Length: 433
Image (cartoon, rainbow, N blue to C red; front, side):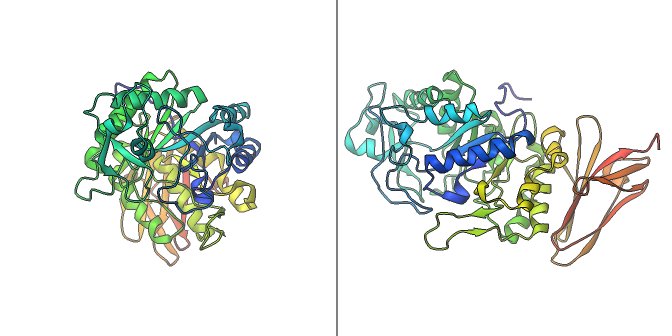
C-alpha cells in the first residue's frame, strides 16, 4: 500500500518516562526501568525504553516545565543530554553509553524531541553543522504553546533540511532506535491549522531515511487530523489520535469514538496511536499532586488493554515499573491478548453504540477475534450474532483472560459484563468437535 517500508512492522511495545517522571527523568531511573523490562516484560514482546522530554535541561526535576531555562547544546545547535542528570553523557558521549547498556539488555532505546531548533541557538547566534546560522532557518512565528524551548524550522530556507539531517545523524551515532517527535501531529498554537508542521514532518522523514539507521518515527500530540491520514501514513510509523490520555473514565470512553474514526488506517506498518497506558504508579515527580496508582478500576484497566490490543494500537507503559503490583504485571503479560495486538490483521468495529461496542479482528492463522465492551456504568449483557461478524458455523469461545474455553455457539456471543467491563474471545472452529 505504501512505498516506504515501516520501521515498525508491528505496533511498538515499550515504556515511556512521561507518565511517571514528566520532565525530570534521570539516567538512574531510566536504566532501572529498562532492567525491570528486561527481567519481567521482554519475553512478552516489550522492547522500547523511551526517554521523554527535557533530557537536555539541567534544571528539570519534575513534571512541570521551566520556561526559558538554559539548555545543553553542542556547537551545531543540537540539544544534548544534561550531564548532571545523565552522567554517562559527559565529554560529548551523549546518549551512546545509555543506548549501549539498553541494547546489551536485548532492548531498544528511544528519545523524545520537540520539532524545530532551540531558541537558545537562535538568540545566541549559534551556527548549525552546515555553517548556516540558526536564526536563518528558524521560524519565529512557529512556536509551541506549552513549551518554550524551540522555534519551528522554515523549510524554505537554505540549511533547513541540513539541520534536521545533522540531528538524526547525531541520534544514529548514539544508537537511537525510536524517536517521539512532539508539537507536530497537532500544532496547537494554530487552532485553525493544526497540521501546520506538515513540511517539518517531511524534513524529519527525509533525515531519518538519510541517517543510516532504522529509527521508528512517532508523532505527537493528537488529535492528529484525520484529513491528513495519508500524509501521516506516508511519513510516520505511528501518530497520536488523541491529546494526552490519562487515567479517567471519560477519556477511556472517548477513545472508542476515536478508534471508530481511525480503524481503516491500521496496519501495513502504520499505527494510529491511542497513547500511553496509565497503569501502575504514576506521577512520581509531580510537585503538586504527588504520585498515585492509576485511578482506573481493574475492570477499566482490562477494558483499556482489550481496546488497545484489538485495535492494534502501539503499547507504551506509563508506570514506574519497579512499583508494579501483581495485578499490573499480569495485565502487561497476558501473552494471548498481546498476540492479538501483534499478530492479527485489521480491526473492525462490528457494533457501535453509546452503551456497548463490539470489535472484531482476525489472527494471522485465520482465527476470528471478538471483543465485547460494556460502556455503561452499570453491569450489562452485551451480545453479538455471528452473522454480524460475518461468520457462520460453530465455534468454541476461548476467553483470553480466563485462559480457557467458556462455551460454544453457532448463533451469538453473549457476556454479562461489569461496569466499563469487557471480554475478548478467540473463536475456535468446532469442525472437529
